[in-house]
Amino acid sequence: MMLALLLSTLLLLSVPGSCAGEEAPPERWTWWSNNQLGEFVHKMQESNPEHCKAFNIGKSFRGNDIWTLTVSTRPDAFPSANTPPSSLAPSFLYVGGVHGNEPLGRQLMFYMAEELCAAAGRQGVDPEIDRILAGGTVHLLFSMNPDGFEMKQRGNGKGVDLNRNFPDPIKWSKFPQLTGNEEPETLALMNYIDLLGDSLIGATHLHGGAEVMVIPFDGNKSGKRAPNPTPDDKLIRYLGRRYVDAQPEMATNNGRGVDAGLFQNGMVQGSNWYPLWGGLQDFFYLKNQVYFTTIEMSDEKWPDASELPKWWKQHRPSMYELLKAYLCQGLTVQVDFPDGAKEEQVVVTMLNKGMGSQVRFKTSSTHGVHYPVPAGEYSVRVEWKGGWIPKKAVLSTEVRPDERTLLRAQKPGESNVNIAVVPAAPRQEEPAKKESAAGGNQPMGTFAFEPDARVPPRPTLFPYVRRASVVVIFLLPVILSRRRWAGRVNGPRTRHALRNTV
Image (cartoon, rainbow, N blue to C red; front, side, top):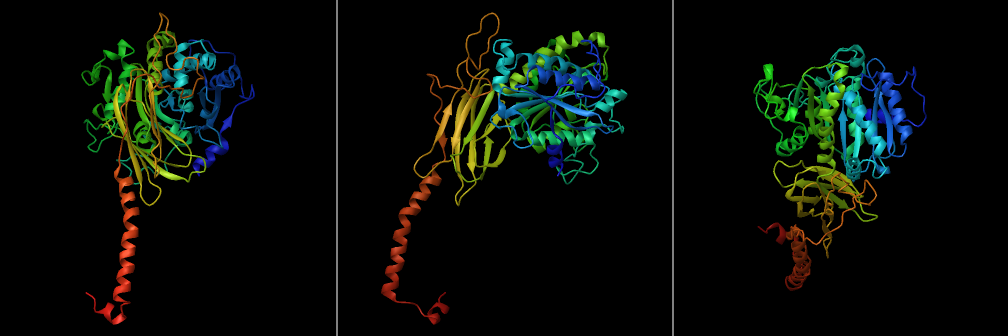
């Protein structure tokens, strides 16, 4: 019902000047108002309407609009009321302004949006952005809590802390069902992420009050400071480290003041810092299988606007590095269905421990599952649950540094197994100024991977299902003929004889 409400209110902006109370263009290095935010997303869409689209995903407690901007070079990557984004185009979401009095992330996202929309679909303007958008889609939710920003307070217009407002598996026995206490901003984000579906593989929300990357879980059962890592802790630590290591200010931070000694080179697992319940990252990791993190961007919650150039210079490399970690590196499993195939459930399981969650989906068309893993050897199991005998295959391949590898799998048939291992195209040597390494002259946003001379590891398959079916087919006529012959020799058995049979 809530998703239907979102679909009915999702507004694709296509006309300029529809924001009430237009203001003069803001100065660059200052805090932009909610009205200026609305005008900004209009401007970005007008500047590049094919590749930058703005959406109003709902309203806050006080009626402020909640805006997102999607940047992609694939037409099927934009959310709409009729068709979800393609799962073949993995995407990443930045969320700003969850706490209204921590606006740094919100403001820095404006500067990122300007660069993304200026380069999207315009080959050569920025090779780094070319490469990112060739790998996937970027979603920017500038201000989840526009009321709190206006009021310069942590909570929304009702005073509710939105990062404590999500159903929590420890505190709520009916998780992931709603508790009934969710604020409109919370519901808007839930519905938006549900709408993005399996295309969304990663997200982070931007805060202030420290300089550290926080990874899940945030909560634990004891309520005391203690570790409680996720099953994918190894993968999430790798992803978090990509952000942290791009800026020495955070990478050398082991905690200051009351946090002294709590951080490990700019990172901390949430419950090992201070446990909290009802937060974004735990909810979306468990419910939507999104590899979600939290970034505390500055020790001061609301820095002086004069420091914005310094903060943009510090965090810009990290914000782009995180996009590359999720969208330009890893393993994509593409499960192909022929035309006219029946819908069935498919389960994709990462067999390398700690490197990705199991993904289930039900479809009759080609579907993609992306694991943003580092370079290495990987195996995944694909299971088709339709039919009398479920079928499965195990695929193995190598993921090379700074590349995406595509594994294509089709349900094994009686006479053949159509499994292809397709490595990514080798990365081109970079000149002094970095050039696009993943797309070349191929259309951006597509999986334009070509095999090279290197021979990938041979896929290993489970053969016993096929062999067992062959044995049954050959033995069944023999069994039936023996039963018919026995009937002719012994004659039909009477009810009395059957009743006395032990």
